[in-house]
Length: 319
Image (cartoon, rainbow, N blue to C red; front, top):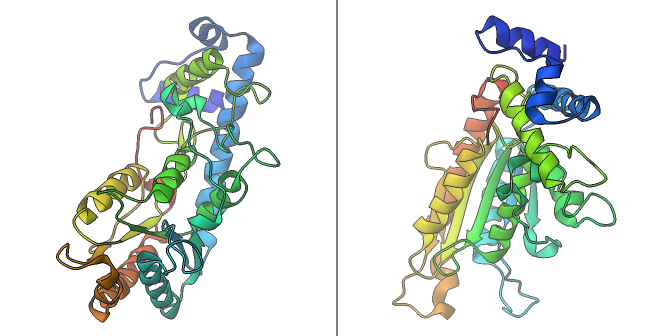
């Protein structure tokens, strides 16, 4: 059963929350009936989307592990050498496959990913799913047209990045920034003018008033929720802990689950020249660690598959 705004009002009333009649909402939000109905339509569609995500999560028996490589290095390009972090990611994904998972490697350097325009900072509902800055179709980039759907289809995601200047790579940062569309964003209130700031602020106010934290999808919809994460970093010197921390806090706040020992760092020493890095970084010791990471991610995903995504809690009326 898909709940409508009337059902949510009744639930809110039973729980001691204020019930809003349409006339009150239109006055509070300063909108007409047509716009209010559009806000309700989006809420109903988002609850349906949430229900479908829940059902697909529980029905999908084969675990799908996605590997995201943020390295720009390629033996056929300027570096004239393969990526250390991607090589470690391949070892990790190969172990996941041996454990019974379906795997896919996505090398971000092979995709056209535009930068995020930070619409979210104006208000939550200024950012949309799918991304309305690069809308799906001819105007969109590979993030909108390809990668969002890849992420939605994954049960676990392993992120691999080199350490660049004490941080994740530029490719990984651009990718993560664009993933904000998956973290809570809804469809635009006005598809013809998706960046109508005043309308989007009113839409956000509607969500704050009408979301029910016991009804998944009644407010902002976090599409990473319940997926399992792992992190691999490689580098020449210090910075691995900063890169891992940067990813961990973001991904965890998006709702991703981290099993024990779910991050690794394979670093060479600053005392060694960079041309000596590969045998020091891509060695059996570090490969053993990423194989163990793969096993932990696989075990945690099997455990998580027994729990509906809707059981995990967050504040639906904010993001």
